[in-house]
Length: 356
Ligand SMILES: *Cc1c(COP(=O)(O)O)cnc(C)c1O
Image (cartoon, rainbow, N blue to C red; front, side):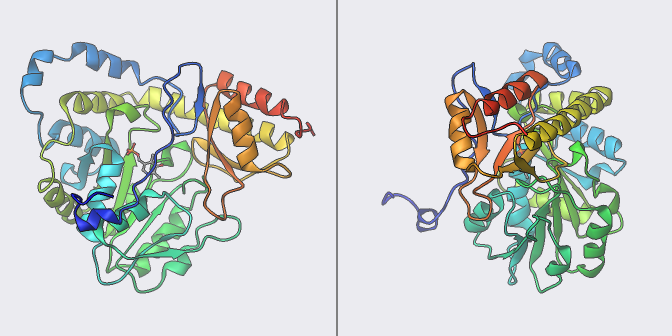
């Protein structure tokens, strides 16, 4: 607390991201980063970059990047919004669409940044419980609302909804904005982008941080009707004209262009995820079926906090949430084959784990 702070910020509860350790011999499976380097085309774009241009401001509209995203997803350029990571796109989304008289509906277990933005913008949130098996039940969202947001696949559970269920929601919820956060969609779920032309209130948000190995560049985007995109542009241009720097724009274009590399690396992560699932199950873990680049698992006998501490002592970081309902689960990012093998080998050394 400080007497210099505005009253509104005294009550904020900021988001706490997963730890970024300084040491180098740590196996980092705690923030869902991609274990593969960015595409060789991204490295090429960096080498080709003319540093003299850095004295100039970047394109405030990131037109070339919007065009490449529009072509990739088969939409018009005015249906694309880009931001400094999808976290910023989400922030502008809450500001633009969710400050309504009715509450915003969201799953009670989901990406915790949603509550942080509600807090920041004074938006009332109504949390809809997941089923016991951690499934989102969209039928429960048929009620008065000032907007709906959920992640598909959901975080940190990893579970995905089918497109049919999402479309059924859109058919009955036409008066407020529905946001689908698809940060992990490329690891095995179906995107809702193909529905944006049919439903002008649908906004799909994706990121280059996870499936395109560019977390350090901070590039996220939204695809929706021109009407929704214009709303986001109004907020963005009232906040920061240049959210994406030149290098971010150039490397993002290169990453989108190299579709072969994207398909190859995401497929390898999916294969490694299924291997990890089998290994964890043989060590006595219960697994939630995941369509993401992480697994969400709980051990039958050993507390999650204990296992997280044990892995940590052995230089392996995984994520544990203290929130009731999920505090006996670990969220383990899928890393390289060697990293996953090291994680499994480490668990096998835990005194209470018996290989089944
Ligand atoms: C990682 C993540 C984001 C944020 O991604 P950035 O583009 O890196 O800001 C958004 N939503 C969910 C559900 C995520 O897991």
